[in-house]
Image (cartoon, rainbow, N blue to C red; front, side, top):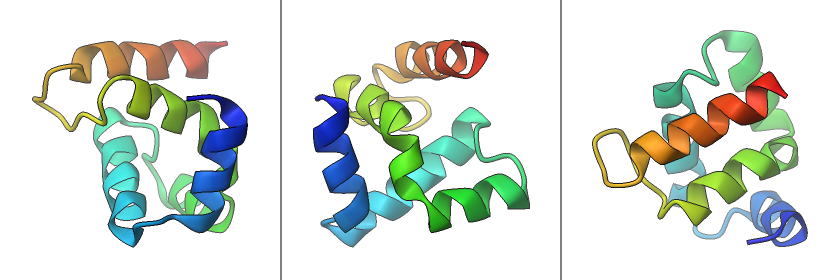
Length: 81
């Protein structure tokens, strides 16, 4: 998935449960660790397009699923760059 596609999906959030699932995943991986980050996610979901791409490209895993470790590593690489 490319960033333009991710931005479009993040602005529309169809279906809505994808939004909640992705938010929960970012909490699980430690990205949304405080109130400020969570509010930023809610107000500006398109800013999280690179993380969304990583999630989709790794099979939309949740903690414990196949692909979770690869996804978590990708997220931590994005945050450190």
